[in-house]
Image (tube, rainbow, N blue to C red; front, side):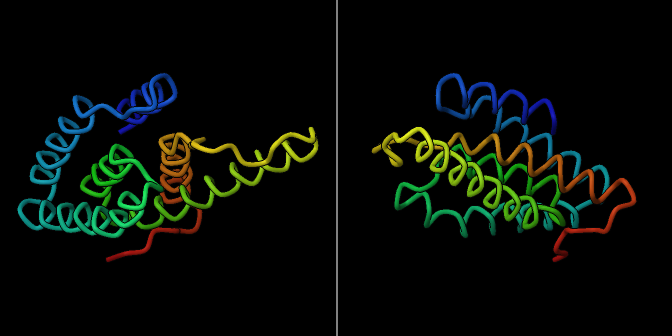
Length: 149
């Protein structure tokens, strides 16, 4: 997952896009890994969480608050890590909120305009950081933060 996150962060920062040529093969590989590790039940759990996260975030996409690439990236993570996707998504939104608040505070200090029309956050960055935080906490002997399904 880390190579996919590195690539998506790079392209998101560079062009504002998350490429389907990265996300869709990762989804297919995720399904294959799910099947190899846990069989049909693991595939169904991964697909269920990928679809759930897509459905939940579609509203934000519809109103222009989140890009389709961000949702696809989270769906891939949901397929590969169904037990962690809710936690990863929650942490990503918290990080994006902190990032936004920090930008506003810095602009207030500089006495600049706080909000700039059309400005966006490259949400792949908080997603990648959230992935690392949640996975590190879950697999380094720290208290588990994942919400199980």
